[in-house]
Image (tube, rainbow, N blue to C red; front, side):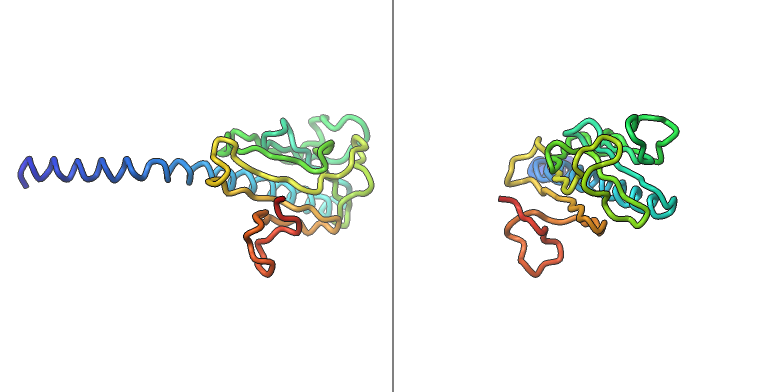
Length: 182
């Protein structure tokens, strides 16, 4: 192989890499949304499973909103930061630095599960706030058209699900959220 052929191969490779970088960037940022949503979903499932296993109230609190950190703790009246009650947790820095969460209802960051794995109603035992019903996850570093938003829905029965909030998802598609984006 001559030097000219090697230079042509290097030039073609450089052009292909330069063309692919924007797509890789979008893919990596969307992967952070997926990582954060799977993490929050796992935290919710951990809280629910621990409540059933311990036969007592367990809660998950979304920390540092709008970031995606969370902690699972035993329910306590008043002080919910007692280190003895910590079961599990995750920092937003673990693979999803650019992912953000939007919590509904807006004034809530906690959902508590009773010994049957159901959401404790009408308020959380630790702070009296309404239980968290929905977590929307997104990446604000992306353009809206490039973003692959995900949502976690938390119904009263405890059957937590990860879904796609886009209106373009067919009504019969199991990935569709109960309440699509407006």
